[in-house]
Length: 223
Image: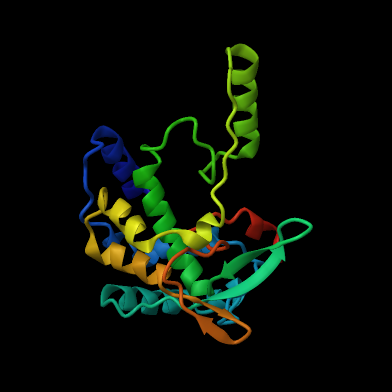
């Protein structure tokens, strides 16, 4: 999408630039692109709607979706909580969004990437487009083999995705984004909650893994 390229160029040229008009990008054409970028055989959310089923009335569905987005009546459904093995002694929780929410999440991710990719350091590899752990390992190997290294630090934040502060996340986004409509949608995703054993659970903090707005490498292997 050419507009995303222009946004990236502006973000790179002016690190202090604040984007005030982004929500209008969530139009039918852009959302249709995002629909076709989704996995076509993934597990459904609590709505039970599959990629194929949603696509049977794609134009009508997207037209209705855009109308709700424009008048701020769009509200994400709670994600469906499932668990997959993390290691021999624990499991990792995943939140599976409804199909329509996946489309909007994909659109938001593409907009956010257009802005923030130019801000990330080149040594950052986690959950970025066209980057992965194998490249990170190769980079670490080059440094270890060619530089004088005295220390190697291995650190991990316990339950990071379950503990993310919504308040501070929104503050961080507002440094670059001043579009209240786009921020409103993102905040609604953060507060959408999840369903577990037919019980709704609120999410005053944290963000579920498994959707397009959060790292989803694990989900790529779920059918």
